[in-house]
Image 1 (spheres, rainbow, N blue to C red):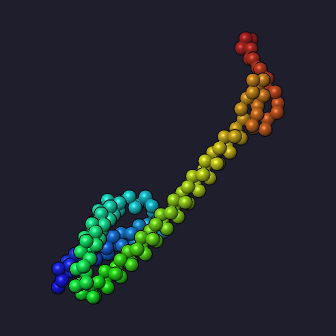
Image 2: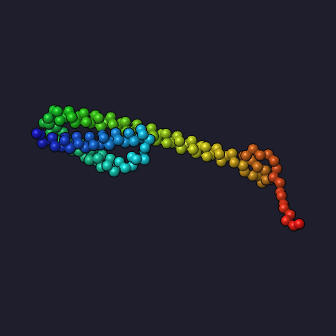
Image 3: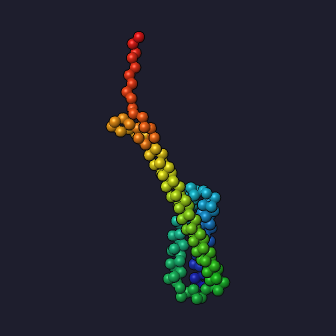
Length: 146
């Protein structure tokens, strides 16, 4: 066993866990449950920070990678490729949900604005405008005496 093997194993473990978490996020988005992603954010942040640290350590110890077992290096390569694919799919899914949410919000805002613009308002002369009414306003008084 090479001196770098434990670092590779740790990186593999974190990469697998982070990939699985990203895949869970994509499933939640596909099932229209983006609000449930919030529960995963703390773990995702911790795993991402650990992953970044481990990859930095591997880069620093790049010369030792030559001594590592070929099968172990291949597992790391495959794991990294799967992670990158999951990350890209996760990003696409998040962008799609964001786009749909933005379009929905614009549609709601437009509907509210349209509805408000159709409500009647009154000019200084007492004429209704915006509601389609064209009759002139009339003053009315009620005599309460018999």
